[in-house]
Length: 318
Picture (cartoon, rainbow, N blue to C red):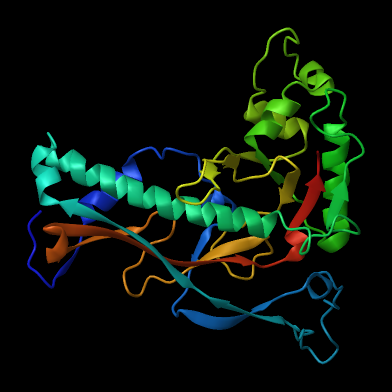
């Protein structure tokens, strides 16, 4: 698409293609931390702590005819989004060689989106699978007695115990779980789970998540299947799971657009300058003479933000 030098053109067509095309990997960061729109790049907000939210209040109408009122003491918090971005050159010579120019542009836009999505996925996984924020003791975490890779592990008991910790921490039902691909394959071999679901133990198959979730007293199970190369450029590739198989996260995920909803966290998104979210970045094009062509750029403006420590219990399962 020809554009004038010095002009940056939003490529709405490529953004639509990126959103419609299946991602090469199953990224779950913005499913676990749903986006919430903010009107400024940074700001402050209040969080209602569990001790305030659960305090019993007098609700009987007073003899004066008025009604009791509460003064909420909020925990002060703040956010500050940052910009994510990546570019790829659209070389004119390559474009002419390419059989279909539309495919040439679309493939590069998809690559840009994958780069941004992968970076954000790594960031969110590192934030949630963090034993400093969620120690494996008290009400924040738990080191299971038998690794979930063992066919005799008490997966049901471990999940129920983790949910009890969540209730003790803030009366939240942690009704969703985040696990890695390896963990899914491990618990799919579990003797008790296969027997409870009446699965043929002689067949090697993955237990359906839609059947497994209610058995574990969960509404939904999210499997992080994405991988990344942790080696530097020029080094021998080292492919690793983004979501560690050493942990399982029991979480309370946001269901509404309210910042006051108790949950593990959010993706704060500031789109005032047209930037998208990491899962759906804005795609732009501008001319750059040195490459004898134009450049595609993907942009996102967001922050992965933890809101409530009580919104997650981290299980050490290996």
